[in-house]
Image (tube, rainbow over all chains, first blue to last red):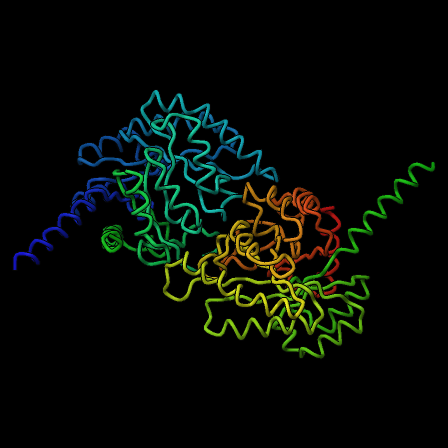
Length: 282
Length: 282
């Protein structure tokens, strides 16, 4: 009887290890108030969260920082800076870096933004992103914040993120020291790419954060709010786990799911189903 | 005064050359009856069309073939075969090849299909597509039909087409003689890829057909019927023209636009705006 018991204990340990890496990304329960979310996470034994700039600004930056600190929560990432097609990108991104530092997070997720209005110059927009990150990297480094370039699915290339592939993100990141500029591995955005797993496995410390969401169809209008909880769609999550493991990434694993149906449910319920989904893919 | 006249004549000649390469893809006016579409094209001086299997079957294959032949129209492609996740893919694709041959078209557009129900094995699905094309190529060759693998935008990888990139399509095509298996260049599906233009420019006779549609946002639910007429979106059409020109492609140029708003308009009006859009991007 000792073997089954030992196996069971082993499973529990692994499960516990994985659970300790879980981070609840605030957008998954978009309508949950910050105070309620922090209390809900503490009650559920979750000690890592990813925050978004807008709700943090609404609650107040210093108040938010105190709230999560007093609750013993670690902020795994702040989402998100970038949007370099906007005129005030430089100032806004420096503010985002300051906010990340104030929240005590080491990682600022960066979504590059789309084409300027009326532009067809995708290559030019991509060059601008690389230049912009080059201008921000020293400021981020001084603040102790890693810029985590997030390649978004190519369906967002026009209006949200001109950085569409792992290769593009890595090519920019590699112009800087690894601690300054890294890449966000988000299963939702990368799963279609037949070359990405082997590249992630070789990415080493360039992986700044690992985020889970699943691909489900049909896509809703606007293609923003139809993502699935891990396990609900067709992404081979275990293949991604293997790839980030091979890379040596041992950091937090965020579940970040934008889903209109999920947002209608009470926050604590969203956290519970998120935890169940998370456990299911390990 | 002779120089302006000469320039004007030159423009007219170029415009005429481009116009002579125009092919009206039937899906652009999805609800236009086949007889009316053929008559409308003849009246507009358009002598090339791309047909779809479903309306051809509805009108009757032999009748459709006679209709377009008697009208003096060339069928540039038949759309579309593939969908290799379905159980009857082998027989259905052989029928599609027969249909293409009966219509006198040399090119059958091939959309691979998505993942089998419940599957997460994207790599496996892609291997199956390569195998399936290998089994069909000899039959297509005997019928004088080129299989034109169409890489679809990665947003269709789950449910419509697991071949998401130019590289994947070319890797399969290159296992066969160029006349047997080629690739479809569709601006809508490929525009986001920062490596694609240089690859198209080197693709030579692998380019089986060149199709135009523009990327406009926001995407509608289901992401199928929100494509733009050439010039209405953010695709740099001239960069694509340059690339196919460099490759030596001198074949037909189809406008293939799936757009719910366009479908509501009378067919002849759709053809007119399509021609205007086509001329605008040359």
